[in-house]
Length: 106
Image 1 (tube, rainbow, N blue to C red):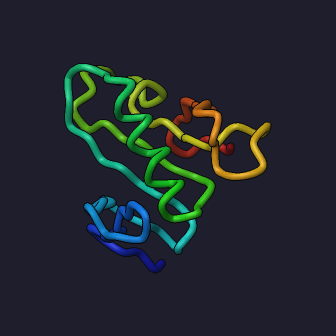
Image 2: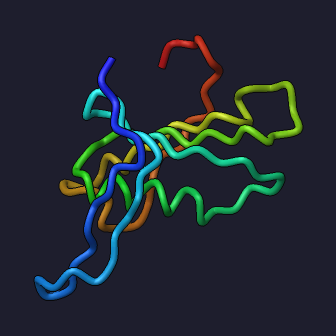
């Protein structure tokens, strides 16, 4: 299985690089994986994954929190995809969250 760790993608403004995003993992050049270890959930994490999807042109993201104080994996692993209404990657800012259990089929 191919993957890239800490993949860097430039942020440009009018063609000038102004910053970089550093993505935790990209698996098989198809899935963005963002890893967290936080006690409190913040909607900013979902926005971060959506930004990474826009930067890479990929359509599937996983947001995984390893510090969840629960034994229910469905509260720890979130699958993120851009909304189906947008032709391009989620320009309306909405997204679809699916709380998936490990080993469950999507």
